[in-house]
Amino acid sequence: MSIALDDPASSALTTKVATAAAGLVLLVALLAAGAGAGIASLLGGGDTAPSATATASIPPAMLALYQQAAATCPGLPWTILAAIGTVESANDTSTLPGVHSGANTAGAEGPMQFEPGTFAAYDLPVPPGGVPPPDVYDPVDAVYAAARMLCADGAANGADISAAVFAYNHASWYVAEVLSLARSYGENQAQTVAAGTAGGIALDWALAQVGTRYIWGGETPGVGFDCSGPTQAAYRVAGVALPRTAQEQYDAGPQVPAGEPLQPGDLVFFGSGPTDVSHVGIYVGVQDGQSVMVDAPHTGADVRVEPFPDAVGSTWGGETYLGASAP
Image 1 (cartoon, rainbow, N blue to C red):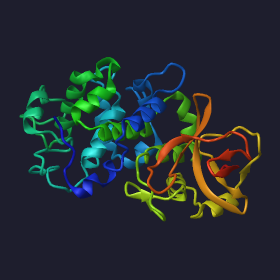
Image 2 (cartoon, rainbow, N blue to C red):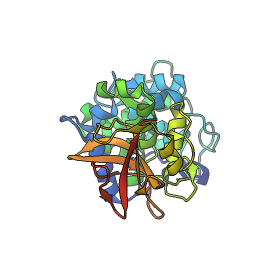
Image 3 (spheres, rainbow, N blue to C red):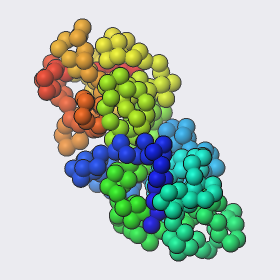
């Protein structure tokens, strides 16, 4: 079994993921939504293009390695390998103990964080570009071994991706984090056009923050956000500068005319009126007949995907849906 880095600095991102089973079910349902597509197809197969989020956050050599290794297991999305590599070692860029030498406090080693016995079970044959004998600290050997392990544990032919990830590290928060990151790393054909827009890039990035806790005034990925923190940060990744607060973002516009269809990445606003805007989220799309957004809702909750009313002026909790803007 592989174990994620057992260090407070490395776990700051992953431990923010919702651990409740209901939260995991909601996330998986979102990933699996749409025209009969399964989780594997939406997370990206071998021919799925890297999203802007992937190319911005994963070193090119590691990105290519994930794609090549995943191809040895039909049905294993390369995005899953990439997400695991991100969680375990920041794609071999982490300087924490156990990544490039030694072991972490849980005994895990290398960029994919294998226990020695587990790596030995999946380290052969030596892959193209690997080192003989196989070395757990060598990225090529480690990533190919991870692909073999996932394949053996349910990823073959896309049979049960979630089970394969759970077998890699027995924690529901880990599965949720990996699936969320994987979804942000790949584009299916329908996403390719949207991802070329600022809104599409911002949405991909925002969805990868699901599970991060709400902190008043927060604006740090993996640590905490208030409602306007992730919207500003997501659009910064997309190259668009937004002001800091929900009211300022609403005022900045441009407003989407009432009744006009929303596009993925549009900002949606709530409050008591146009001069009293108190909440903002990012429009995702329609799930089970309802419009859904990704947002940081309130103290005591995490960044999540949740429904909101379609019609401007409708009540949403104790607030009113005021409309949307398209930065």
